[in-house]
Length: 400
Length: 110
Image (cartoon, rainbow over all chains, first blue to last red; front, side, top):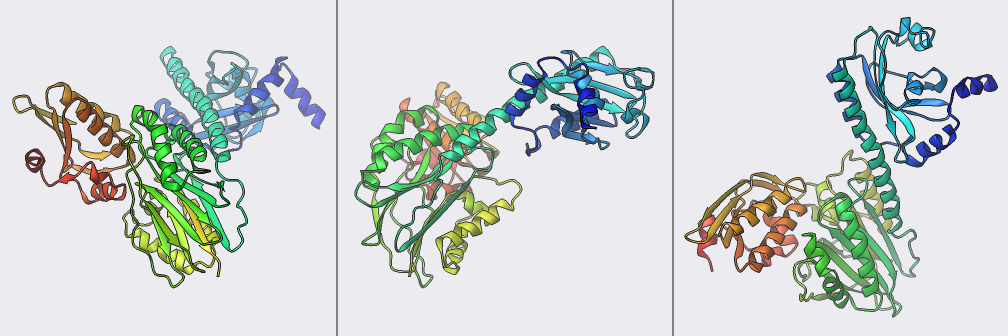
């Protein structure tokens, strides 16, 4: 069976098909959720052409996959029976006006049985290297004519789908790189319990957090929020993180923020970008958190008895001026006390106002571990289909 | 975005409407540039009809303020909604963009 099947597939398959399959795999879009990027195209195509269904297909070694479809349901199936496998053999649009009189398709199971295809039109979609990896196609259960103007429009829509294929590829690669810039492990600190997470609203985002050893045996924490969203914010985020790392290992928080603000000023000025930042260091022996707040504001100290400290002194975001100074606050943690910093995306999870901070304090007070706070918000954020903003939370708790 | 320049007084009023987000933050920025170029060195951004501003909008506003000051002028904001005031306070940017209650008040205050 399998040998018969692969013979059928290989029949007429170009010699470089293996390279084409590799190109498709490298795109990394098979079997992953690409949001509604392709759905918008298939929905529009189905409606504009008034056909039973429109689909973006991807053809691998043996199977035709429907990346997105709209209208009558089309099932993934063997490549050997796929109309789109014919489309990807040539660079131009393939049109079958009536499959019952076309000897290539008259016995095709999709013609003789469901979905009883009569009309098919498909235009190939290329990977960045020029390999035709799939198609944007239209099918209908009635024969129809397809004009030159319609061919042009289908090709236009296919080129849109092709741009999305490439864009998805770049964005998803960028997301992998960005995720690798977040801490991969949580250090074990005797007497303390720390946790953090960062979830971008899109594929990539402008929030980040970081923790590492300071030069004097303390532990350094950073939480940053690059104003704006998406790729634009992500590029700046990577820069800010690197600059903060260089400054934060040795300098105290306020000095580190000042140094980073000066280093970053020109770049932030050029891009009209502001960055809010919270830089802290924890002295394990003394239980003291020293902290500088650059316009971030969303820092809570929740005591073991549930009481919340008043807001601490803070300065402007990075990007406003190159000669700013930032105040430094000292928080003495007693057993059971927790410091939490979050991005404003967390407020949006509640009601979007500062009242939400009281809710956050409640969650902290009810948690016996820093990890519980983070897990709570990770679950809440994951349950929201489209996050309005990036969400980041870091918690430090003194055990006891 | 409505831009009204009074060349004789050297003032301009920019009136964004609805939401200022990543989508149209650049429009706000170019409206202010347009006002400065047209001789309105003192720009007032009237936020009474802006119902929501995200961090991209805030970035554009601060960028516009810098541009106004660099060209020897200034930029003030009038009648921001509670949401905008909250964002300004949270980030301490109210220290550089102090909200005024009306366009007239913004032009009058020193």
